[in-house]
Amino acid sequence: MLRLFKILPQALLILSIVSVLATSLDAQRQSRQTDFWSDPDFVERFIGTYSPRITVEPRLSPTDKTYMEEFTTLMQTNRQEARASLTAKAAEEGSNATFHLILGNFAYQERNLPEAVRHYQAAIRKHKDFLRAHENIAFLYFQLGNEEKAREHFTTAVKLGAVDKNIFGILGYLFFENEQFIASETSYRSALIYEVQNEDWEFGLAKSILFQRKYKDAAGLFENLIEKNPQVTEYWELQADAYLGLGEKLSAASNYEALRRMGAISPEDLITLGDIYVENGFIEAALGVYKEAILARGRLNVEKPIEAAANLIEAGFYDAASEVLTEINRGYGNSLDSKLAFVVRKLNAKIQAASGNMPDSIVPLLESMVLENPLDGDVLIMLADYYAQGGNFEKAEFLYERAQNLRNFEAKAYFHHGKALVAEEQYREAVRALERAQDVKPQDHVEDYLVGVRNVYRAVRN
Image (cartoon, rainbow, N blue to C red; front, side, top):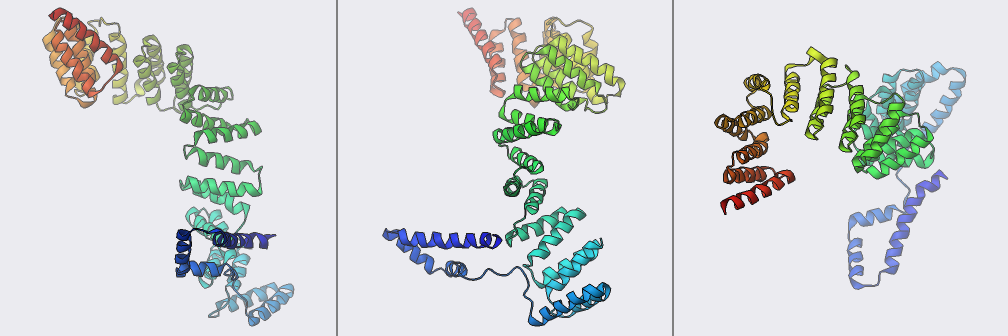
């Protein structure tokens, strides 16, 4: 059967060539075929299909065969003497590569792995297409943790005709680790032909497909794995990644909740789950998972819950954001570094400013933060808003202009400046500021506000 497997591709090649020749009826195609036959490379490949395949085993001369018979007999009576004899024979100039392969196998059985490597390397030097030597040294390198060498020799073995499910399975893993995801997928599929129910290889296939961003296929494969073994938490987690890639965030949330019930969800995934709940308006549910993540102090990067609080503020859920910040202060307290402590103070200030009537007590905080970080546009804008609302428009404009000179805050600063100008009934200047905000970063809510201000300006002007 194996022999038939090796011959079949050659037979198919011959059949395809004959079929093309027999069915070509138009002159242009015949002309191209004439060109093929004048191509030495094509002729060599075609003739090669009739020839025996280049051997992947070194040929034993009659003398070598006689020696191997004597060696086999000696092995039955005195293994040590036989081993010494074979070592001497392999050391002879021009000796057969097979002798090194056998010595390598002996060394491997004795767990003398460095010696085994040396003999397999010698066998390959003497016969570069020695299939068994490439297979053996590849398995040995894999066992030793030398993945690069293992991948090199396994790949060579496959090119030489190796058909082994374990080789394909290991290559799938090695290609994945080397971020060659297409090759990994191909290898795992080849392995599964010979052992369809191998869960490890199915898992490897699913991961290689996921990392190619073929999210729909990956989600389906992980679904099959979950049905077979629902206790494996990694299946749920990676399927959630596939759902996120598809934009199916609520499906991902279902997976995260399953992990949560199993007590296996990571703090980072809890934050992601909370973000999904915020996007869909499930604020109480979001608060619960955010707090649960914060309680995992030491296993969670504190930047994640701080970012979650910022998202809540951006979405307008100020009370919920305040609760998250309270939990952060309770959980991390004075352990925050200066940069993160600054961000937390700024977020608290944003919550206070959200009412539209900032208390006077916020000013010393904002002033000190401006001195601490004069390039933070958010703080400059909040302080400018305070002075604009308090009637000190000259100072407010100075702060707005400072923020407008900061690239990441330019659009926001022009928008807030424009709103302040509207409050001052300076509609023409407000329109200009709002138009500049849209030039820098077009946003729907700014455009809607700009349209309204233009209408007021026209009405006032007329």
